[in-house]
Image (tube, rainbow, N blue to C red; front, side):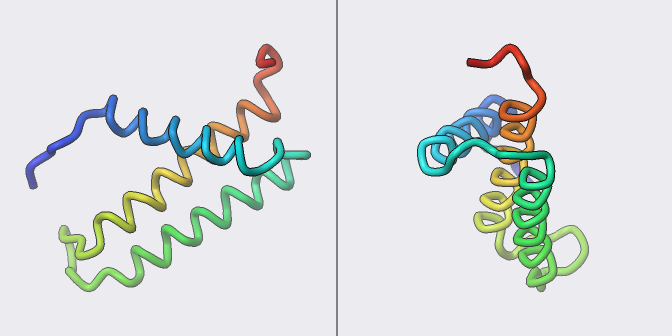
Length: 89
């Protein structure tokens, strides 16, 4: 499989998703809420993995799977940003 992207592209997409979420939703109120959001995003990724019919090594829905993985990463960063990183504004 050819990689037509870089880690910087992935990080940019995570940042874009994070910014979109921050503009749309208020900060996480608690670790429990943050965990629930991450779990929900992970469940959505898991459903995409389960829907994959391409078999071992293949992915027949890469765009949707990538989107869900980016959302998991973005919400994990938001967890740290909203709840743990005490130096943010």
